[in-house]
Amino acid sequence: MLARFFIHIHEPKFHYMTNLILHIQKNLGYPELHKIDPNTQDVKPDEKIFGTHTNAQAAIPAVICGICSRLNSSEGVELIMAANHQNSIDMIFGKEKTELINRIAEYSNTSNEVVCQECEHVANEAVRLIKEHLPGTGSPGDIAFFLNEQRANALLYLPASIQLGRLINDNQLDDRTHKMQGPVSSLMHAVEKQF
Image (cartoon, rainbow, N blue to C red; front, side, top):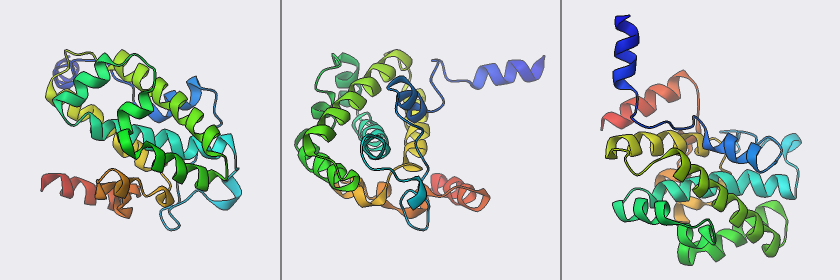
């Protein structure tokens, strides 16, 4: 009884999904995304399929990381919560949108027009899900917890060749240690958060 009470007290005040990547992938009907190999910083060659699947592999984690960067300010939270699910990719990336589209098109060997449509589709769904699961009453601590969890999940799927960190001025996105899993990596991330 006491343990159940303790767990209840420390839960965030809003209901959030455990992995935004998986929700977007399933809701939009994309094939399963693959975690990148920490050594090559890309999907294993036998898992990489060019076209829509590769667009999703790059676009979904890039959009989530972009949203997490945007939500780090109160203005960003207000902007996302007021969004109308149209042109979300412009709202998230602004003037960097064109370069992001170019990089994903090169990564997936697909036309910029197709990549732009896929990215817009992903961004609109991501904004819809965030608005649904992150009500405006979430405390700053709740929002920070949500962002850290979603960003950590997204980094496991983000191909390094997109160089998203350089594009949106967030060097941690391109840091290999953030894309590793396992007991040693988890310990490193825990120590890093203390500083």
